[in-house]
Amino acid sequence: MSEFLTIRLSSRADQPLQWLVWSPQQKEVIASGQLDAISQLNEIADYASQRIVYALVPAADVLMTQVAIPAGSSRQLSAVLPFLLEEELAQDVDNLHVHLLQKSGDMAQVAVVEHQKVALWLTALDDAGIEIKALIPDCLCLPLFDNGFTAAELDGMWLIRQSESLGVGADRSWLAPWLQSQMVAAAVDEDVSEATDDQESPEDDEPASDELVVHYYTQAPEGMPGVWQAETPELVMQLLAQGAADSKVNLLSGQYKQQPAWRKYLKPWRKVAIAAGVLLSVLVAEHVISVQAMEAQALAYKAESERIFRQVLPQFQRVPSQSYLRRQMESELSRLGGGGSTEGILYWLAELQPSLAKVTQLSVQNFRYDQNRNEMRFQAVASEFQHFEQLRTLLDEDFDVELGQLNREGNQVTGAIVLRRKS
Image: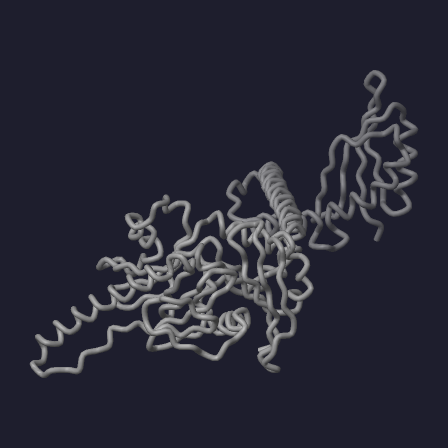
């Protein structure tokens, strides 16, 4: 592990707090110091920028205790724990953060701390731009011994570690009564254990010692109960820093649970993602509206094409599909057009159109085409006889033109024209 920063937070905003940078590789302190108030955390932000950070909270602000787990509540233990502690706590459980430290059989070890204090610590760290890996009670970072407690004094407060997940922060004035109570509790547990052993085995066992062993790293107070055993003196913050790196305890659970690292990197892009999502929603909505409009237009075109089809070809009233409609129309066009040859009515009309367009005073009333005789007859109306003669002259270039009898009725001249292709 590379260098890391350990910060021991204070109980109040105006209290001093200590910090230390430890190098496991070099096994030495890189830097350390003390801040006068929690508002000065920004002064050590540079030490935190490229290092893992552990935040220690005073054990005096955390209640570490154990509680019996009712049968059938293991699956919902996190939700049940606050209510199991309700009778033991003087505060409303809604104002407290309850964290499960360890579960052993039907017993659970828990840490209880006020939401207000957790908010104070996390807000101060966030304001300083310091991101922490874990929030740990300081006493649980002391070395752990199998045959007794661990003790060290820091800032006039004795930190006591009882077990892997239990400990306290004790003022010197009530350290002796607390130790005495622990000895009494241990003696009661021992008597119960011996009574159980006597029922199971008639053999006499060697009685266990009722003395409480306390391993201490700072100067021991006088007149304390138990057997105080000195350990190699160490800088207390160094002990706590080494223990923090190995600790599995982290009070950042529940509503304080840390987000995955990838969320932190995505956070600056959240507004961009929201804007992109809104834009995408608008584009999708516009596309849906456009598709709906085109579908409606397609339905309108389909209905109109079927109406025209039934009007032109009334013998076909049922239109099972658009392909059927298209085939019938193409068949009828082929029939009318002479199958694509020069004998169809459409081909004749195409040849007549230029000549008719030049004689605007003459209008055609009706056509009659006889494919077998390969001739076209049509009735026309004009204002003067010469208009018929003019049209005959134009058509004479491509057809044998037979001009029928012309009759004047009032201001109009009517007559028939027969066209045959020149052989």
